[in-house]
Length: 95
Image 1 (spheres, rainbow, N blue to C red):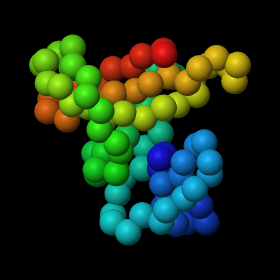
Image 2: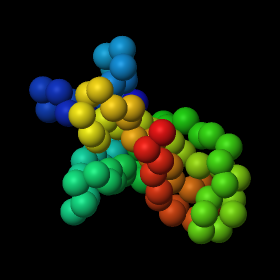
Image 3: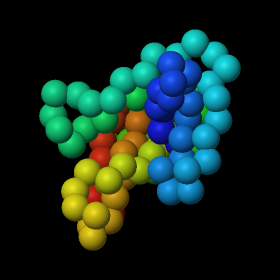
Image 4: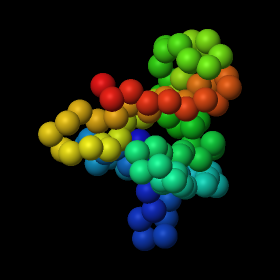
């Protein structure tokens, strides 16, 4: 689910199927960092992201939030982004 503003209302929208859920809490929506391939997700949005078992390269924790984003051409697989649930380190995989 990705954060999105539609008609001044905040939603989490599934990029694959288009399903959307209206955000009931106050959250900060951000989209891009200075680097064009990295994405910054507001910390309160993290609570709505799924968690997977993967080892953080920085602290060794075994859980991270994850999301997918199409950062290259449409015929290439999406980029997988991870954010450690313990230290907050963010990294990506080009799947």
